[in-house]
Length: 203
Image (cartoon, rainbow, N blue to C red; front, side, top):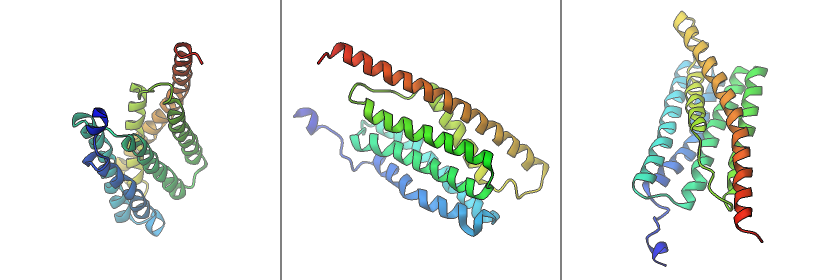
């Protein structure tokens, strides 16, 4: 009873930021795809929106941990907000670029992301599967690449934009590779956690 009385409320600043990120997903999508994604100013505003929403991801996690605001709702909503935002970015950019390679990368990454998220929910009854360092690097690379792709670099015909676009391709390639490697690692971790639980809790 005492633990329940001291449990943080779902209505706290960390969860509010998470919900703000969810609400901001369609706003980002509208800015990105407005006028077919060909208008420079709208793409720049989409970049600003994406950057601000990704910053809330870092802030809400830090607030939840530092102020003891971790809730079951937050544990559920936070990964959904992250996957919704990156999913909107991959799909929206896929529509704009309309290239088979980008769609291939997007589909593989999204299947991995949602698959691992769903697996986390199923495995939590056996134990906690924490985010790995590779997973954190993957998230950073993905967010940086998606943010840069959101900028209309392909419209600006300058040498600098070509260099930035090339760097963005490299970042996404790195994110793709780490996404696959960490995905496999998470599956092995989940199997190990389940096996250890069953070994110590025989039915």
